[in-house]
Image (cartoon, rainbow, N blue to C red; front, side, top):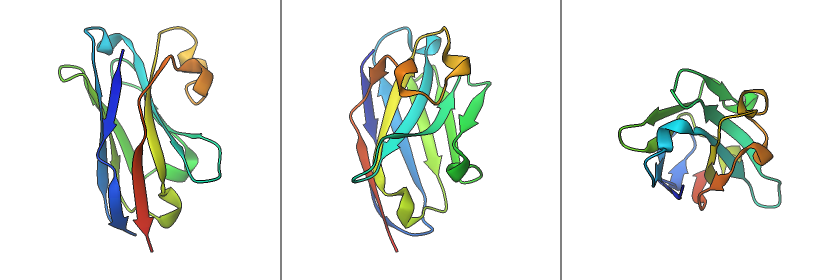
Amino acid sequence: VQLQASGGGLVQAGASLRLSCAASGRTFSSYAMGWFRQAPGKEREFVAAISWSGRNTYYADFVKGRFTISRDNAKNTVYLEMNSLKPEDTAAYYCAAASPGTWYRNYDAEEEYDYWGQGTLVTVSS
């Protein structure tokens, strides 16, 4: 699976952005998907994840109520809708795909994800 993230940009605090992650391959619907982010000088951290069917979603506490993860298996794409952006949301955002298995117990762990896209940069000015 190859992943291509897009949709980042420079916005003001309070604005919204929608990130997209397009996947190649015909087996996209069998992968759980996640978004992680890495701010300058910090470690990469979990943001949100979604099960293969889209039925189950999970979020980091710091984005609950502001971000929404979704997927369109017909389009091989996962989305991250980001609202009420804050300067502390500034980071490179990465999408990742996880094979079935232990993902449900460790959806927020980088090691659960087998494939990673390149980052898309989100910069939020105050």
